[in-house]
Length: 83
Image (cartoon, rainbow, N blue to C red):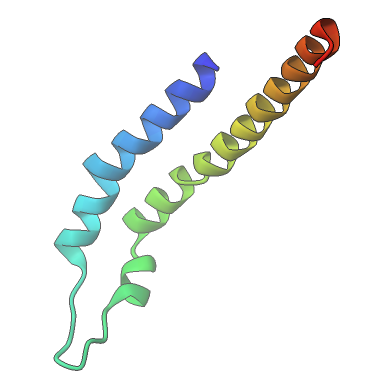
C-alpha cells in the first residue's frame, strides 16, 4: 500500500506541476474551436511527459492488487467468523 500511495502522489504531482502547466502554456485554439493538440503531442517534451505518464498503468495494476488482496482478507475473516 505504501508503494501505491507514493506512486499515486508522484502521478498527481507530475500532472499538476508539470503536465497541465505545459499543456496550458502550449495549447492553442482557432476561432472554430480546433486545437493544435496533434502538434503538441509531436513535441519531444510532450512525448517525454506521456512516457512518464505510463506510470499510471503501473498504479492501476497496484490498485487492482490491493483490491484483490483486500477481498482475500475479507473472505478469510468471513470464513473465520462464520459470516
